[in-house]
Image (cartoon, rainbow, N blue to C red; front, side, top):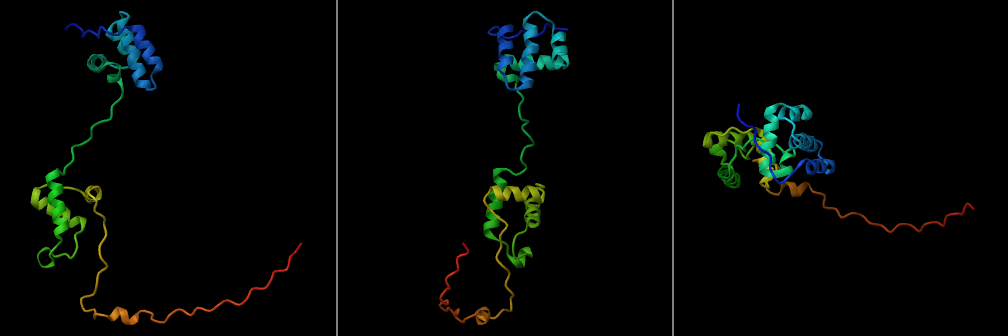
Length: 183
């Protein structure tokens, strides 16, 4: 087994304990206190027992502490999965939406999420769920709005015929009576 990694020389045990006392992050304070025990001459096994972790995790703490200082011992947010749609995919999708469907070719009169997901698969071999596609389109500034469908055989002007054309009958209200005081 090799030598343990040395800790940074610009900190010492009292400085780490003071940082742990001021820290608002409990996990960072626990890690700082474990490393303070190492600065005091304790073994890595004792630091692991103090931190309630394994030796490998103490080694990871030392690596992070040496590289970034006390801030390296804070909890970090996991980066998450890489997005499936690249900028190229988004540009092509925006062009496709702006172009609109051709009913004779595409078989639809407006794009649905299912249709766009199918197109992405056929074009780029990228599988995206409806929920993800909806979230992506919303982030791109698109909304799920469509024009109200119009019957193909509707006569021009038929709607205007059925609209109410009578002006509203406004009458002046009768004079109000003075209310009788109840005092």
